Image (cartoon, rainbow, N blue to C red; front, side, top):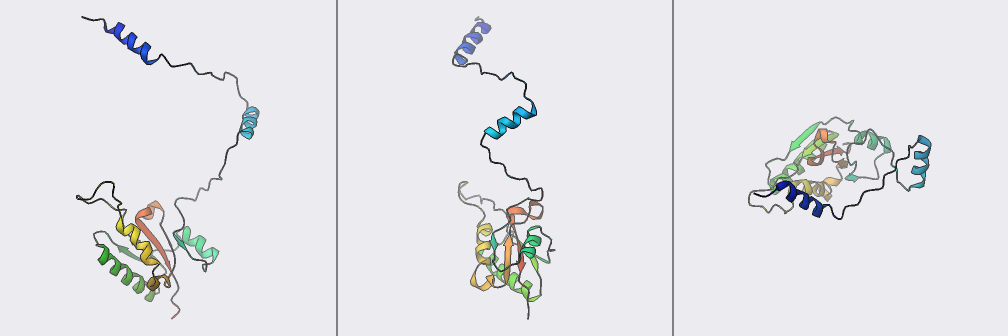
Length: 176
């Protein structure tokens, strides 16, 4: 029978042989010395905006006024129509998005939402392969020649409204 404590001690000595004690700063720092130290260090500070909760722009047009854009980014426009693309194929989704945007515009709706989902891999799909074909395709469709004249701007909404798995769309006013 071997002495395990002796074996453990030998192993511990091997593991810790290259370890050196860190120098510790035992001085007591006042607020003044901490400010001096902070001013000497080159750090980048970014002001915290308590209202920021998501990336605000995917497709911002130059012809939208600042106040409307600000209201839109704060999600102050109520969602008047919703299209959920869960379960759609890419071809069926393209047709549905096109009909949805045109129909919403003709009905004088202002803010609509399309839920694309975040994308889940299929059983036969490689785990490293890109997911979310609708999540990637729908923003491109919204910028197509046929639909871009009906849309003022669109963004991914805040997480409470679907985040990266949805698109919050502000339609142009139908003046006809």
